[in-house]
Image (cartoon, rainbow, N blue to C red; front, top):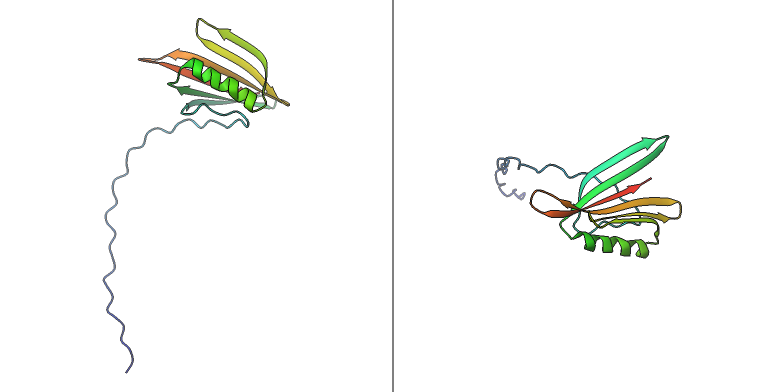
Length: 131
C-alpha cells in the first residue's frame, strides 16, 4: 500500500501588528572629516553645506556635556595623532573658546571649541568646518 501523508496543522495566522512607536526627531546628519575624530558622545546638532564659486564647504556642529577644557585637550591630541599642523590659534578666556585652523597636506579644517550656557547647564559646542 502507498504511504499516506501526515495530517497538516492549520496555517498560522499573523498576530495583529502593534501600533507604530512614536519616534524621536532624527538627528542631523553630519559629514565625516577624514582624519578628524569626533569627541566621544558628542551629538551632531547641525550640518551646513555651502557652495561658493564651485567650492563646496561643510560645517558640522556638535554638543557634549563634557567640559570645554577636556574637549579642547582631546582635539589638540587628535591634531598631533592624525598629522594635522596648527596654522592659526585663538583663545578667548572670557567665553571660554578656542579656535584652530589646522592643515594636513592640501586640506584645511577650522575647529572651534566653546562653552555654551544653555537653559539649565553649560555644554560644550564643537564646530568643525572644511573649506
